[in-house]
Length: 301
Ligand code: AMP
Ligand code: ZN
Ligand code: FE
Ligand code: FE
Image 1 (tube, rainbow, N blue to C red):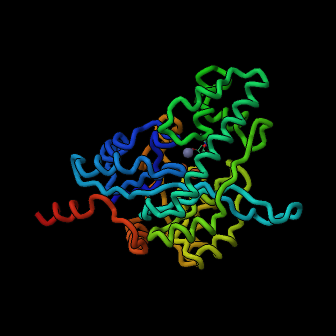
Image 2 (image 1 turned 90 degrees about the vertical axis):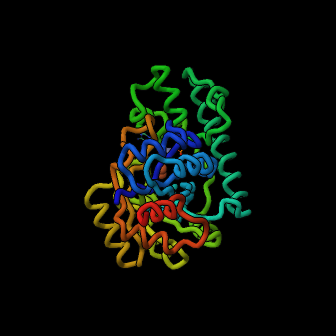
Image 3 (image 1 turned 45 degrees about the vertical axis):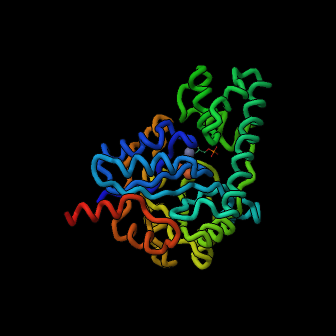
C-alpha cells in the first residue's frame, strides 16, 4: 500500500488542480492520497469526483492544513513565544460552523498579510504588483504565490532563494499572520468528527520549532498523530518524533507535502505505513474516506 497523506492543489499554493492531483496519484501508483490545502476545503468536491471516476481504485482522504500557532521550544532568552505550526486535519465535517468561521478569518488574514508584504516590497522598489497576486480569487493566497512572482520577474533565481531571502521570517518584508491556537484547532476538528496530525513538527528551516512537550499535552486533548517522514526532517528528527509518538500514544505519518511546480518534491516521495493509516482512520467518526467502498467491492468481484 502506497499512502501519501499531505498534498496541495490550486485551491491553495499548489500548481496542480484537484482533479489533476488525483490523476498524478494514480500515475505515482498511490493507493491513498490526501488533499490538504492550506485553510480551505474548496478543492474537496472536484477531487472527490475525480477519485470516484479514477481509472483504478484510489482512496481519497479529504483534509486540510490548518495554520496554527503553538508554544515555542523553551530557551533562555524568550518565554512564552508563539511560533507557527501546521495542523493536518482529516475527515472532519466541512460544514462545522466553528471551522467554517475560523478558516474564513484565516483566509482573510492570509490576504491581508500577503498584501502587506507585497506593498513593502513595492515601496522598496521591487517590481511587485499586489493586485496581480490576487487575480485568481479561487486560490487561498500564500507566500509561494509571491515567491513565484519574484522568480518570474527575475528578482530571485528560485523559489528556494525567495524563501531564503525576501520571504523568510527574518526578512524586513515579512509580516506574521494571526493563526489559530493549535489547541483550539485540535479541539474543533475532534468535535467535528475528524482527526489531527502535527505537520512537519521539526522543520527548522521554516523558523523556530514548537515545544515538543506541547505535542504530548495535545495528545491528551485529542491530537492523533505526528508527521515524522517529511523531507524537511533529517534522520534524528524522524527518530525523535517516533520516540515521542510511542510515548504519547500517537500515530506516525509520512507524506510528500506535494505542491506541484512550486516545490521540487514528487507525490509519493514519503509514505505512511498501512497500520498507522488504519489507526488514524479508525479514530475518525466524521466523513468517510472516498473510494474505499468501491475499492473493496472491486476486490470482492
Ligand atoms: P505561508 O503559509 O503563506 O506562510 O507560506 C508557507 C508555505 O510556503 C509552505 O506551506 C510551503 O508550501 C512554502 N515554503 C516554505 N518554505 C519553502 C521553501 N524553502 N521552498 C519552497 N516553498 C516553501
Ligand atoms: Zn504550502
Ligand atoms: Fe506545512
Ligand atoms: Fe503543506
